[in-house]
Amino acid sequence: MQHEVALLLGRLGRRYALVACVSGRPVSEARRLVGVGAIGYVGSHGAEVAFPGETRPRLMEAFASWQGRVRRFVRERENMRDLKLLRIRVEDKGPINAFHWRGAPDEEAAERWLANVADEAQAEGFDIHWGRKVLEIRPPVPVDKGQGIRTMVEAAPVRAALYGGDDVTDLDAFDALDALTAEGRLDHAVKVGVRSDEGPAAIVERADVVVDGVRGFTGVLAALAG
Image (cartoon, rainbow, N blue to C red; front, side, top):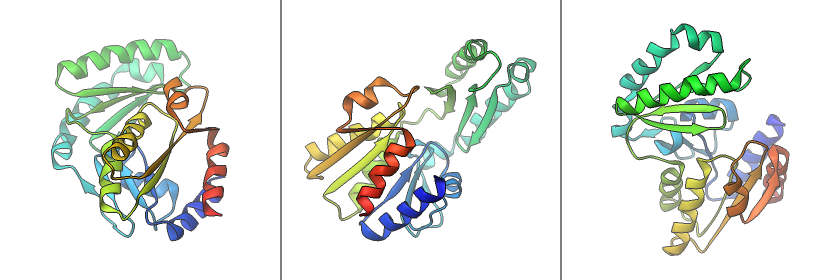
């Protein structure tokens, strides 16, 4: 499946004015996982943007300045006995760090423990974001996937756009497409909701097109590739 998607993205990158992968991970990590160098990337939930052909992403300076403080906060809790007993995993995504509890022996206990971490993070001035069995600790700097989409669209010679997503953070990208269309920057925008068991209901409710899982969205890519 991953190889099939990579081939499709490569073909799409050659066919359309702009194709990009949008991720909560840093651009470097997203590019490594996707394995396609000829497309653009939006990383760290919009804080990083790399256009096709760019080797280094553009990182929002205000966002990057918090990286050390976020890491220190997370490292202090990473060494706690409870985190290890609950088998909560920590992911370093640059200025964003995340706690994952998917697959933990007691997922409810892990989520309760992380609720306290979330309170502590907010008390120390960080932003937090709850996703699908993940808690992210973020710099208190406004940033979202929608900002990354807007940066990409405004710099590209495009009048139509399509975005596919399955998580809460993808709703910001839906918002951006709606706004860009209302402003007249885009003539057409298509929001593809990828339905999953853990995805928010709003993804399906707000989508123009709904598909089931990765396989369904792969079908969308194949249709676009012709």
